[in-house]
Image (cartoon, rainbow, N blue to C red):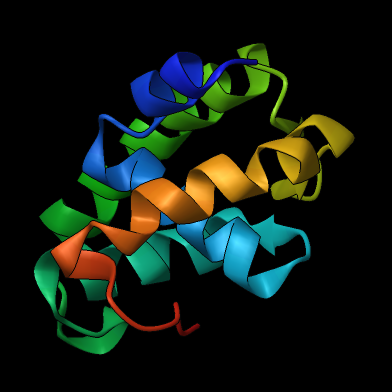
Length: 114
């Protein structure tokens, strides 16, 4: 995958947050973990304070847009039974590109917290 393709994956805020979380944590993350991270970075609220509408919107977009797009690009594998997003070897090769892109994102300064 080229740097241009990595840029394409990072065009969307949610995908950029997902890639940042996977790169920072260096491990598989559950869909719930990703939802909570997106909630924190995109909406600046905790799960307890989030509306059901926002939680549902994030969950649907993860399942129907972002996870499939990342999976089809070969950067993650998705275990639907465990609802687990697993970074692939291909993802590890992209990490320098991902970190370069994330360094210039003012919304993701600092490390991603769960």
